[in-house]
Amino acid sequence: MKLVVSVAAAAAVLSLVVVGCGSSNSWSSDAGGGRLIVFAAASLKKSFTEIGEHFKTDNPGSDVEFNFAGSSDLVTQLTQGAPGDVFASADTKNMDMAAQADLLAGEPANFASNTLTIVTAPGNPEKVASFGDLSRPGLAVVVCAPQVPCGSAAEKIEKATGAQLNPVSEESQVTDVLNKVTSGEADAGLVYVTDAQGAGDKVTAVPFPESAAAVNSYPIAVLKQSKNRELAGKFVDLVIGESGQKILNAAGFTKP
Image (cartoon, rainbow, N blue to C red; front, side, top):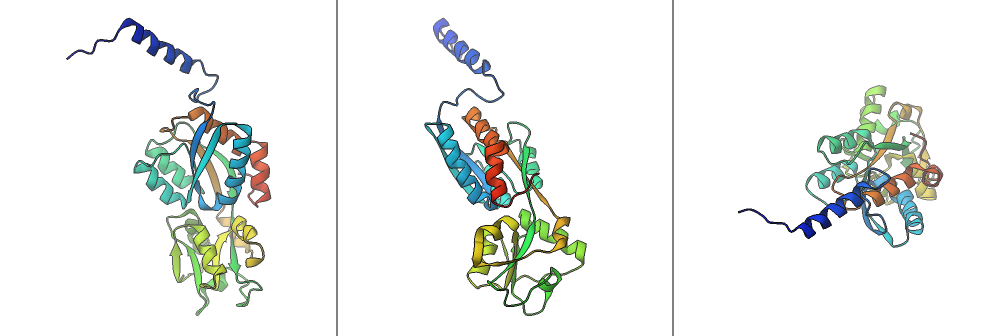
């Protein structure tokens, strides 16, 4: 059966197409306001929450909803059809997976980098002084699971140092590692420098030079499924721009 479209209806559709094509950038022109859903690595929670407040101030009528989790979990959710507008990963590997699944509207941009540090209970009662100390018998150590960026970084350091860790648990996101240490369930854990800084006096951070062998770059991209790509693009611009970078640097992130 043929679908008959009136001339008036066709003209209306054409006018919408022309308006959309007349945008001055590559995003859709639907940016007067609305709600964004941002999928972001758990280590970005504090910084992105603050950036989100700036975004709402800069874009009246807009709102931002965040989904913070391990980057690998976020990719799984997106590939299974979860709605979202922006994806920010704690490593390039999971962003590459999103690209291979045809989830991205354009090329991702690296906006920050992060390295691991050891955290212990305040005062470091177990006297952990090096990465090698984490393999000490009887020391309860928690790390991220291998598929999570912080876990992948820990594995790289293990290979570089020859130290073999025997963690009591492997967590799906870095914030869970931190919580195990602050709650007393673990003697030590491997988290990002930014997580240790954010925890303040709840932990003692023990930096180690081998962490330089596994620096994670954080990329961000607009998702192809976004219904408001221009607004999503504005969020990305805020993150990679001066205001967003100041917030990230204050949290301990370094330049990509």
